[in-house]
Length: 152
Image (tube, rainbow, N blue to C red; front, side, top):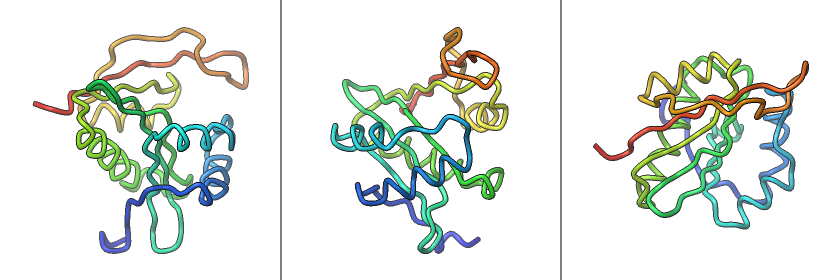
């Protein structure tokens, strides 16, 4: 993979089916089409990470009053662990900072070790836990709440 092959672009509404297909293949509990449509309609930033014509990742971020919230991020299953998530996260943080956010918040499944490691490696710190926040295959799962200072 060369850097020239990878591009982060704004998601257009007509690309939502591709995002949904990517997420359905990578997670048990993907966002619905309505969630993506509503997020883009509300003016949230939606970014797609493209390798040539192929979508390999997507993220949605809401920004306001000096804060941003990473609402959703997903990388194609076959591309996880290869740096794509780091690129997508960097783009999301850059966008949030450009929109005036000084801090980025997120929630991540307590059992998602790969995502937790990524977030910690770029400086996110745990600030709390939301008990039974996510649906799970065997009941509910806790969310780890994290934050990152975007401005030093």
